[in-house]
Image (cartoon, rainbow, N blue to C red):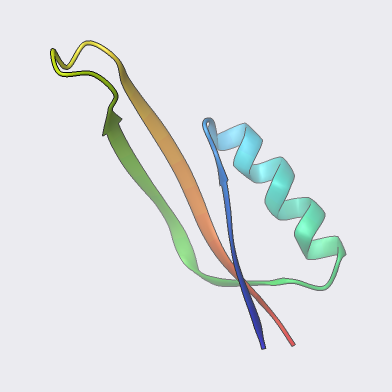
Length: 57
């Protein structure tokens, strides 16, 4: 069995990646998760990552 995490910086980017993987035979494993990342010491540059685990095989 193969395991992969698809991710993107917007929900739409993740959706596009997941749809492509689904056409290649990958299946969803669990639900979407998000992570807030503080990219600097002052906290002014925060980004969001959207991720989805996928399995195949």
